[in-house]
Length: 410
Ligand code: GAL
Image 1 (tube, rainbow, N blue to C red):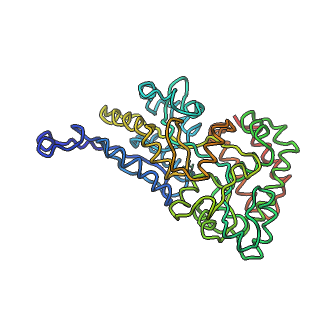
Image 2: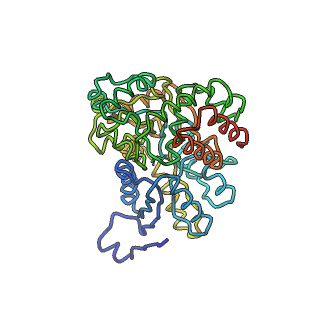
């Protein structure tokens, strides 16, 4: 961590439009796809323009790769200035260890409690009454993205729901098109399962299992239907030999695949590819079955630092990330919804507009990151990797293992 002080003489001579000193902050995140990089560049641009300096600490790979690196650096006494994490329980242990900056004063000065919507986003940053993160977007997992060209090639109407999508799979295969694109990272197969869960069993069952950890419901007939749908989806995903989520999204963008169950960060990839929602691709919130938004998303956390100038710069960055102008610039590129209702997203595309309407209707559920500990999330991911890559694990086998995980969840 370095502080570059701009000498008064230099400052006076060139009249830099900056404060007397610019503080560098190293910011870690895992946004390395085309859309993600375009979005995070908006944060860097705004922070630099404000007179400080964003030192980009992008970590390639998914959150599953980046989070252990981020957490071990903070625990190991080599903290970054700021880091992306998903808001919710991922930073719980770091906060409890007293390693993270309390942002309550910033939140109060900028009236976060009044402007951040839904309030659950700020709740997900709050522990023991103090606020430890600046939420920056709402990312919902509850979407499937469809290639209009793929269905045209297969001679099938673009599906309006999961049942029609599943019914179209054989025609897609006949046309040489991969029905369902899926990357091979654990969080992707686990995320897709969660979306099927909400769509097939409904939000009440999903909440009973993920919020109440109700093992009887986890073992019940509604969840059996979800695991049976997951067996169907597993068949549709066979042949999707890509690793990263955005490689799977690219299969939809190029028409090589019919669809991908993925969070709305996929939008950023369609935008970078200059594809138009409704024309080139179709989005179905809640798989067209249960129009719902899960209020997951990203937030920035600020590890404690012993340099008061760094601490002041951390507070300036936290305030900047939540500001209206930065919220619009970032979320339009990220494909996510803003964390405040008082911004004008006139440029939002059809899919983002659907998301904003669902959000306004109140049809929302928390994200798994808000309800499950990283340990439980990891166990479910391990089960899902085994299930999605198996030819023999039955719905009943998978459900039995799932019940054990839920029964032991905190
Ligand atoms: C999520 C994150 C999103 C998106 C996705 C894929 O955890 O909230 O912003 O980038 O990972 O990298």
